[in-house]
Image 1 (cartoon, helix red, strand yellow):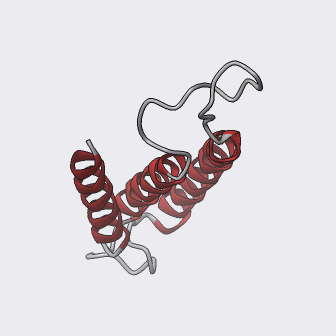
Image 2 (cartoon, one colour):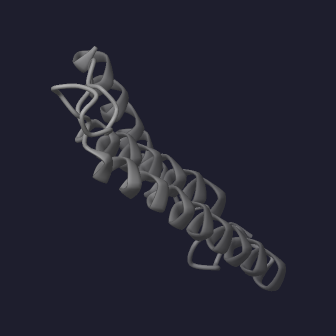
Length: 108
């Protein structure tokens, strides 16, 4: 389970970084989203992967840590807002510069 989780994190992170290094705005936005998914999965994994009981006192001897779950929920909201803002910024640049190149120069 941990190996699959680590491979998934590595693939998401590497694809996100690769797309963020592209010269077009849409791949940069998708790369940001993939990188935020990888960070969310990493934060979720810090709260233990396995058979941990829910964080209810007195019900079990081993408790899951609720802090990473709260961090992931917060990161999901922030990531959604960041993606929406980056997408609007990319659409605005496309409309004004008539190019989706990140520096605005384009191919033509």
